[in-house]
Length: 301
Image 1 (cartoon, rainbow, N blue to C red):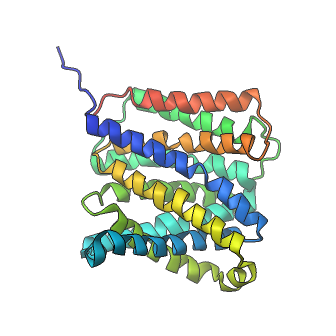
Image 2 (image 1 turned 60 degrees about the vertical axis):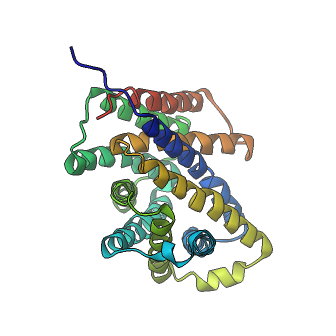
């Protein structure tokens, strides 16, 4: 008789931490909406998010550990370069391109291919088992996210090959962040975040060239909104996320747990922006939460 493998307490803590990170990422739409109302374009928002977060991290690192937290070897720097360019800058750019060409709903639907990419890469690189429980959890999760985002209304969905490709690419790049981040758990999370944000900000600066837009939109409300965005949905979320990954989690389970982001974002839309709530959205929320429970029923590796 096979002995049942139980999840370790530190793993439970890790999954709880990535759940909290997902909740914090759920505030993205709230801050982006505020910044949009202040006249800031999405590409400029993405640049400000990374650049200001890097500055805040530098100050935090100096206070916490001085110069030693800035030390990193060649492998760590290469990982940060990949995270910054691909999973920060190009992810934001491709996702914004998708929204511009096929709309928010379709972009979200196609970007939710991310958990599928994570499962495939986890199998290829980490030899994780992808059993029937995980497959069921993935299917329930993707359906739940789609229903939560669209509310069952597919009439306004647009399509173009370029936009669809950009959305799927965004899903892949977000999955890549999870895979690469899993290999950086031996480094301090603040160090990884700082360098990846710096590389991401530099890349977006070259692509978007947001300097004039920043000068034109500069104001105290803009500064406060950017600081809130960076502290809550950027530095705070990513730090907790990386700390969670350091608990030796199954990478293939992580994106399903962090998908609680869609539930939080929907709740903010309902209670803060007075968006309509319907039965389909409630079913979607229920499916997302159910998928997290189902995924954690899968036997630990």
